[in-house]
Length: 400
Ligand code: NIG
Ligand code: FE
Image (tube, rainbow, N blue to C red; front, side):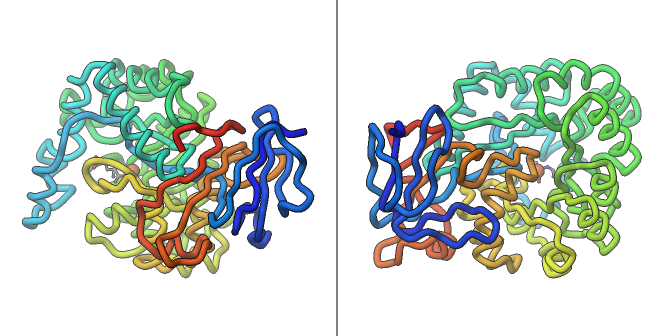
């Protein structure tokens, strides 16, 4: 007898590669694990039973690229960008990321914790159960550590996967001394932050860090036992995606300026392409080379890039819809991109699918009025899909 059974799910999407959606599906949980996935006929008995009739079932969603932990507001900068100012020029003049750095350094742990809890609660309400969060708004040892320690608390509404992004921008105290900052990152900051982070990331771009800096930081992070990611080929082509793939990074993210050599290197290494349509939209950018990535067999993930500058988008369903309409993904690619492939991008293959051995996270949705209970309708209608039933680590979340 299982502990919990969710049955009669009108369309259950396990997100196992090649497995068709299951009509009248069921998922059973015991001891924090999935013990059955299949038709409701044949499901084990359980102590608690939930009815999923009329609903679409998916594994808990995975947002694999966010900058959710920050203080302050950039609404003024949003207005300036609408009036024609350039994102990179604002950063180089000390605004942008650096304005969020000033506010984050000044915020207390309590303020940062309250902001993080509120944001993660809103994300969970949409069925997101795993969220990667990057540092990068501290840029000094004290604040970067403070942010990572906060993320490491076990009490967040979702599973938090912390990434160290000390190389997000050059902080004011190192102005004109980029090499000194890189040295500081590698020799002083990394050894202290590494125990609190799962992954390291570098923003390799004009106005940020160059390819040589990126290589140095990623190699040091790898030696410190961290998984690797990279913000690559977003504003300018730098070669960062190929470098990251060669170093064994689990993903390269953004990729609007990716070339064929980068695609080939990513395909060879099995490096996931993380697509960030929120940033593409807000920066009025062109899509990455999706057809060539697909042809090369590079796995595609989709994330919000939630941040107060380039992507004030915290709704992963909206990102999935935008990935289809603005980048050309299929519905199935977008669904895999916010679930299983997002888990791969994080080096966490247990996330984003349902079956024995997977994370025990299940989410059920109702589609908009008049629409069939299928996942395609959730992607078609943009965003704001609230979780109707949510199971996290095998436990039913009461408020869902
Ligand atoms: O992923 N491009 C660099 N980092 C973020 C932007 C962060 C910000 O503008 O605050 C990004 O787009
Ligand atoms: Fe980002």
